[in-house]
Image (cartoon, rainbow, N blue to C red):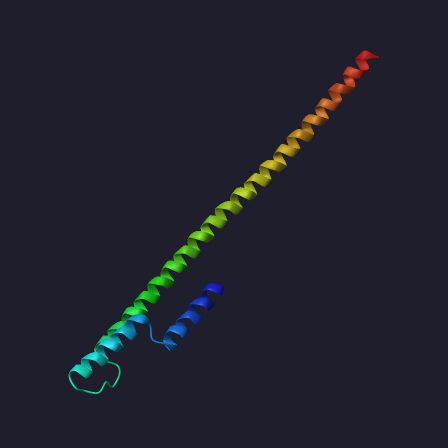
Length: 116
């Protein structure tokens, strides 16, 4: 859920401002308009192309972030599974030791009885 909120906030912030490629495209469009003696009226072809590039870059970044988060979750799951298995082995080892102590105590008692 946190990732979704972060993605939405990022997307909203990108929609609110021009990205670097869009700004570069806008500058190229302004320069081309000035070179031709025309006023720049906004939304030139280079600006639109830059905006599309910014969206593609943003989408690729979000995809990489999502993939990294998924891999991190897989690693967390592997560690948790290993911890759970180790806890079960610890419980089994404790039960084996307790059983061995019980049997050894019985043999110690027999040995004590033999000495008397």
